[in-house]
Image (cartoon, rainbow, N blue to C red; front, top):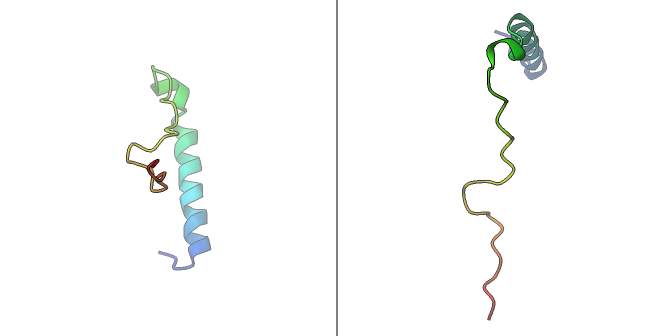
Length: 52
């Protein structure tokens, strides 16, 4: 296993590209992809000060 972070990243990207080429998402997905989560389910760390 390469220890160079760049080499690790390249290997991951190559593996992901090969995997997505083997299984096109349109073939095995019957329902539309879920919308990306734009709002965090947990309370925002940037809380507003309570009004006085």
